[in-house]
Length: 436
Image 1 (cartoon, rainbow, N blue to C red):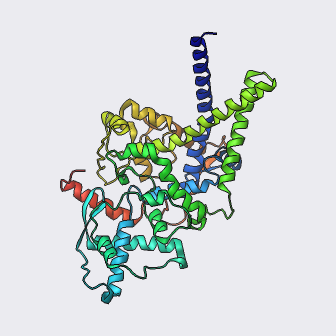
Image 2 (cartoon, rainbow, N blue to C red):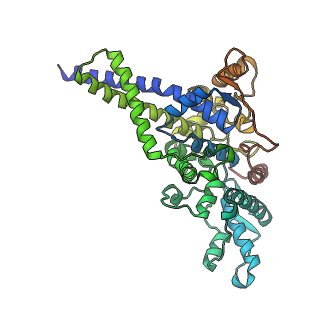
Image 3 (spheres, rainbow, N blue to C red):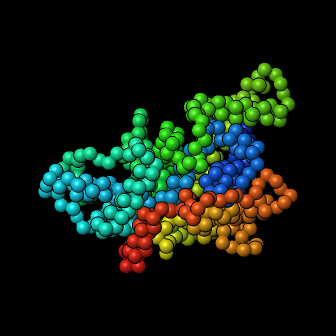
């Protein structure tokens, strides 16, 4: 057999594995958008118990306890594209100075604070204290009696906290590389910030940074909820222990065996060597499917928060070394990628509408379909969401029903008051001509 023929066979086999991996992974991605996202996080739908069971089975390898994903995504909405952590630290320092003036002699409390948000050049002391106290209350509510205010500061630390010279809204490297027990500061940093926002990245193209590095960002939040499940929202606390490492390994093995069984049946050959070939192919197919799941999250969390964009800008956000985030009129950076031309609409469809209607979704997380359009336009803009909405309201399809929503007036998947203050200041700076 010639080398050319061998190469062709290798390419054909590789193409088959990739195609099979995509076909194997797509149902799982669809179920994540249904169960994890619309049901668990936002309660816009309610699915049958066996749909949940199938989703959990598929997602063992990626997130053995799906509430880790749910809690992380709830935090994404609660802190959309901002972090309250810098204001929280400054507020704690100011409160400590005021309570112990004799131990902070020579420390001046500034009236203005820079480097706390990408789009706001300077916050007033009053804004910082209001945002910081909101953040402090969030941390207290989560930690309960375990919360401890700072007992002491070194004078040089106070100077550094009160007079930052570098951006404080970037993700900290130490949290991504965390090992061991979490400190209260690390817990606060996770609870008070969007876990995967391009607006918090340190490079020249935050969208591309999240596109390539979303997994590491996601882990910082998910691992905290994994190790300290009591910090999750009450409705996401299942009260059971999960050995994540063993569950992932077992999930990968099970997924590979299911794929291998499919390969074996498709080839219809049952010699000993055929079982080995099927196992290798099944492992490869399952790996491709896993990559599809990861890619879906990366694409959604990056391109779904690229700010105001155009078809040309959408391409630039994906591939350019530099991309400038431009605020929406309301101070957010959520993106409806259907405004990104043919590519933006295609990406939206391929991610089951997750990228296409982010702006609509963040404003109205209770909606099943992420679109403000009606009729045919709605179906073209959000085909998956419109299908789910139709099924949920159909008396002939018992697997999906409209969700029960949340009790009370305040939804836990809407931004907190600190976020709203920051977004308001962004709007004011935008109107004042500040270049974003």
